[in-house]
Image 1 (cartoon, rainbow, N blue to C red):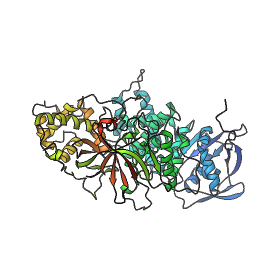
Image 2: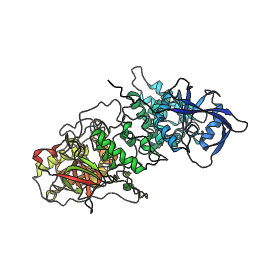
Image 3: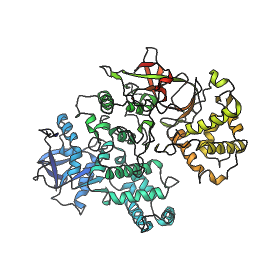
Image 4: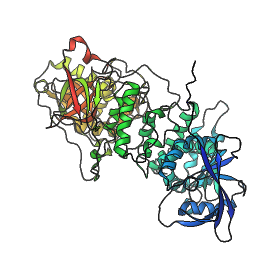
Length: 637
């Protein structure tokens, strides 16, 4: 049997740098070694951010004057004072060891970057001088120690004891930790691969350091302490928390993370070269073969569209286009006119990392996936709107138009109001997305009152949970599970109105949706009739006990995923993308797990708007012989 490995693997020569103190400024030597040979000495890899390219500083390397960036210069100056390293320590530092003027070399070295960090005996993360972060590393070390004390012999945790660290007298400088976690390193795309793949890591802030393991324990302690409640900025917390979760995944399932899932999870990270959003993760992705070695002449358009084509070909799935629901540059009011076709996710759009960014990233999908906690087992609860149909598609030579086959299920006729959009909470320039009233006969005509209202409440409760019991979309929703919870919430709203004890997200949602016409009556009227005999819940039950699960699902769907209640011309109900509007087509594309919204254009093409949960059509129902729907070849541009 022939060996599947190529006969000639790419050569992997690297340069290593060794620092020696010059008379007035840092100096050193640069030597080439073969990475995979025994002649390559042990070396330490440096992970840092390049920062501003202005104000470079000069050092001497092999007798030549060499300019380095200011932040790296500060590290080289402090390096001789770090006791664990000596003058004999070899270093791999990308801006020194790679010829930055040679695009071909940069591309070749980029391809083996993962192997370099894997081979390094240790990685040092340079977070910069201490500055305004004085006390941050000490605080993280203290939290790590308190975690140890609060952990019992059976590995359970005394959370109340740990939460005592929130007190002022405990001496934790939370603001210093916040400032440290808001430094750029945590949100740069290249640093994720370096963080995951390195054998050992120490984080340095000035001369103080903490290991990766201790850092992760400290971050867990911040979660237990609920630091987002007044102690630290939420963005700072998630900078550390998201890295911790990714490392948990990688340490348990190395090279099992899909490229697209990782790109979505670090969607708010920065990149100097926008093509790096793809290439920076190849060293840790299970499907790094989706894209070839970087061609220096390629554009962002080339790379992002090639990724979509390769994904569809490899996985026989169109699910990748669902990421354009979120990653849509033009939808984020960009001044950049170089927009991509609507079916190509534009990874330049800054999107906060979410465990479940879109419905198509359900855990069972081999090419998408998500980063739900490692303890959440795989589930058979999967959306299969197109059944077992494979995609029938073609991509135009200029990669502008995706032609694919599917069916039109229905049209959007009415939409509930919302305070949220796909990019997050609506800003001050726009008050909210207003309710768009339904006008179809199905919505205006009065249906049989009791049966209609009872069934409607069950459907809406299912829509608000996207027919899933949990936020990770891993468990089926038992029939009628959340209906009573939904009615209890509605009763509380109808009796107490704006009482702040009613969970905020539900109260705001019902306020914005109560006038939507459904089967001849408003949602508010349906809620009033459905709750005539509903028992009144105690206030504490809304945020604790069984009711908290429904409350959590409402937050997940309406706030985190920014979905709007939608009614179709045929009277079906669902949850649509926030950018949806009346007249959008709800379609099932062959090879796509989730129904999508398409907006017809004057030139005969369609614009992809995003995903749409349509109750009763998430498991292939549209493609049965009884559906009577006609195949259509959609041209999506």
